[in-house]
Length: 385
Image (cartoon, rainbow, N blue to C red; front, side, top):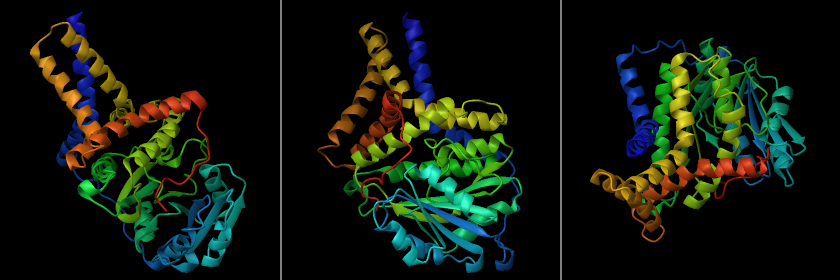
C-alpha cells in the first residue's frame, strides 16, 4: 500500500511541476535546438492592406466606448480600409449613442445574448476581408492593426492574437493582484508555442481571423480558448504576434482576480470536456502534447494538489520516510504563506496567495458549471473600466 501511495504522490508532483515549469523549459530547449521558422509575414504597404473590420462587443460600456472608438480610428491603418463596428449586447445605458457620436462606422443594438452572439452578428453585418476583435476597455497601440494583419501574409495562418499588457496603479507589495508575474510567463509560453507550432489559447483584447476561417461556436465557449485549437483541427495555424500590442486595466484586487478566473473557468470546462479540445483528431503530435501540458494539466492542477496533499498526509500517518514529513511541511508552508498574505503585505506572501487562489479557480469554475451551468452573458470585471 505504501508503495502505491508513494507512486501516486510522486506522479501528482511530477505532473504539477511539468505543467508549471517543466513544459516551459522543454519548449525553450526545443526552440533553441530547432531552426527558426521562416515567416513570410511583413508589414504591408498602405495600398496592400486588406479591408479590416474591427469588432467591439459591448455591454453597458458608456464610460469607455467613446475612448475605444477614438483609439480605433486613430490606428495607423487607411481609414477607407478600416471599418469600426460596435455590437451592443443588450445595453441598457448610452453605449450605442456614445459609439455613434465617437464615429463608429456601424453600431448594432442587439438583444442580450452574450458576447459571442454579438460578435457573430457583427461578423455577418461587417464587410472586412479580415476580422479583428477587441474589448471595450482595451486600447491598441497605433501600429497594432498593421502588425496583426501582417501575420496573414502567411496563407496558412487563420488566427493571430497580439500581446495585451495589464496596467495597474500599484506595483510590488502595494499591488494586491500579482497577475503580472504569471502573465509574463504565459506570454513566453505563447511565443514558444507559436514559433514551434500553434498557440493553445489567445486573448480577447487583440486578435484577428480571416473571414473564411471564422467559426461560430457555442455562446458559452469564448473565442480565447475555442478558436485556436479549432483552427489547428481545420488545417490553419494560430499564431502569436507580440509586436501587436494592446493594454487594459488589471483587476486591482486578488479577490477580484479570483472571481474573474472563476468565471473564465466556468466557460473553459465546457470547451475542454465537450467542445472538442480533448479529441486528438486533427492535431499534429506536438500540438497534442501542448494541449495536454498547457491546458488539460494546467486546469487539473487543483485536483493534483489536493491528491498530493491527501496522499502525503496518509504517508506521514503511516510512518513513511522523513522525506514525506518535509514534503508535507512544504505544502503546508505554501498554504500558510497564502493565508498570512491577508494580513502581511510582503511580495513573496502575495505571490503565494495569488498562486493558491488562482490554482483553486479551475475547481471553483468546474463546480459552478456542474451546479448551474454557464451563462452566455457577461459583466465587466471589477475595477477594469
